[in-house]
Length: 136
Length: 285
Image (cartoon, rainbow over all chains, first blue to last red; front, top):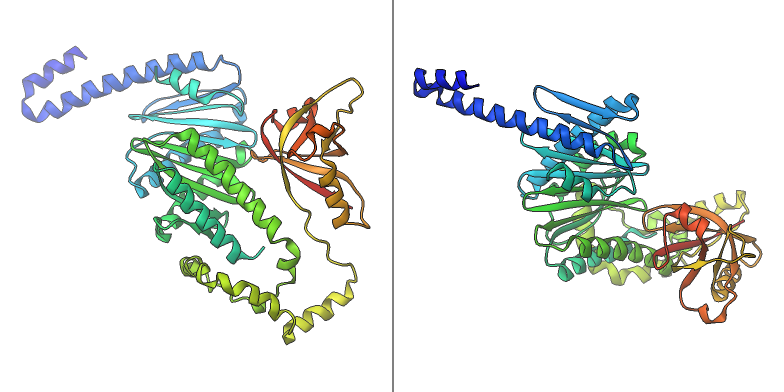
């Protein structure tokens, strides 16, 4: 990374944007790593049945029932998309998180920059506590 | 149930919620198919239709978690909450400053209570006896706004519909002749009573039966004199339901206080506890 920063300084103003991109990518990477650690801990908690963490380049998934992977991934993605659409309609600003309660389980979907997190849990699990633990 | 009554009453309920909670900016009620049942004065139809579209896309995906009961979208400047209440969805949009718990309690209790009250005041026989030909139907979803807006003005017309029943139109006569094929008399819709949960325990207490007030049981028996009522359906505000036997409350000091005594086993099934509200409906056989 340090090498890249040096090359930015040598090549002039047009690459200042590239420098920001590099820094941003590093930050995103740090956020992703930090989220990975938090989610691994959260996944050990009673009532939590798995999580999906993804960004444009990477994904980490840990579900107790792996057969649900595709359905859960589509659900969490749709939750944030629907949330974004609805928040625009009512002029509520950027979507931060979505809590979806089903008859069997519930899901907490969070948007953190480029990172999208979805934690799946039993209905009686404390999603507010889990949210605090995802974003300490 | 007469849709005009629903629309009028629910519209007023939603406006009251907004008055009581200044943080509530918009509220509306819709059905799964997108039909708008009621909306406050602040929300336009186009916004509701687009919200319903986005919500329905999520509902489709939520089959994997047993169907969607509620969704809460937290945004930078506020939140959107959509709750399933019976066959409807109640949407509440609040600002960041709104007291989330207060708004949720109010909307999750008030709207179901109003729905139950409408059912109770305007029971099913009126609805089933009201022929569609006597009631001007809204032309379509596009007219819902006019329909809701006009409900207030048409409120006084409602009793007229009932008097019109004495002069049946040709369509009504046809309906009556059809009903002769099936001589089964129409039963009134079972009344829905709301009670506060009380614990019921003891060694000789059956764990599969709830206890309700004698007056309520008498009311049911009067309503269905020749029918058997041995069980009740108990439903929580979260939509959990169970069917179980019932007995009259033994202790007279609990009589007429709007409570239902429920054994722990049934409380666990319903995921409810002492002090919570449940709806009880007799099962008529």
